Image 1 (tube, one colour):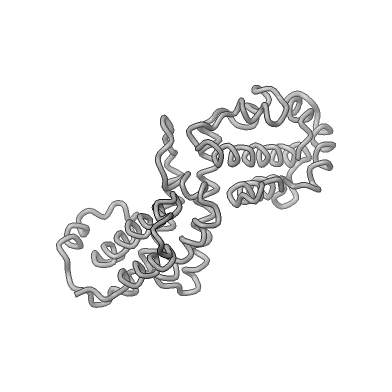
Image 2 (tube, helix red, strand yellow):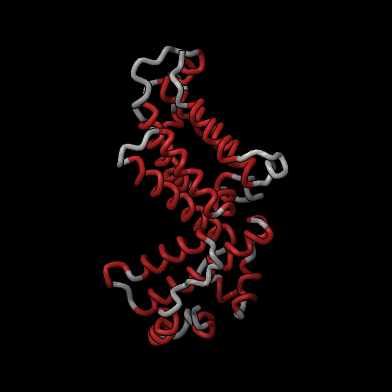
Length: 266
């Protein structure tokens, strides 16, 4: 964990403050995530960025480590009270510093939420793409999605759950989410070699802006959207606990949905 005396003075001390704190934080590396995958992935990305190519100064490395620790606390807040309750001042109190000290690292709540959402989308996009480049079909990508969601439900709900009141994600976030859909569209296009036309597929032929210019035929667009909506429906209900007490295995329901979705049309 970063030396909080260094946090409070990071904006107006020389690089030595960062260097001194750097030695204290290297051993822990932002690892106090309480098992939270979102916190770990965010911490890794910040620290990696801070030390990229060995060009970062001690102050830059220190700044990256403090940002990572702030995000860890943010994920814990989200787990306890939801994203709408996220508070930089509360995080500052937990870290033992003043609110203004943290505002040197994140300009406000929205910037912090954007960072958390970016980390979450980037993590999922990378996991999906890693499977896609090995030739995974839509079923394989569906399993990646479920494994990722189960590993950290709070991270899943941050990007696919109820929107945070008053928050609007920047366009760059939409770009990362589009990468996920692009891989699903490619996988679905490989299945739709001779698919019969449907009325909705015909509609999608003229309403495909959401596909980001992907050349998938209308039938593949239809299949990809159906995969996306139905599987997220099952996942959202499972992770929110709505299947609890219903005496069936949600994993088998998810698998049955996959089997149904990849069946030939017609």
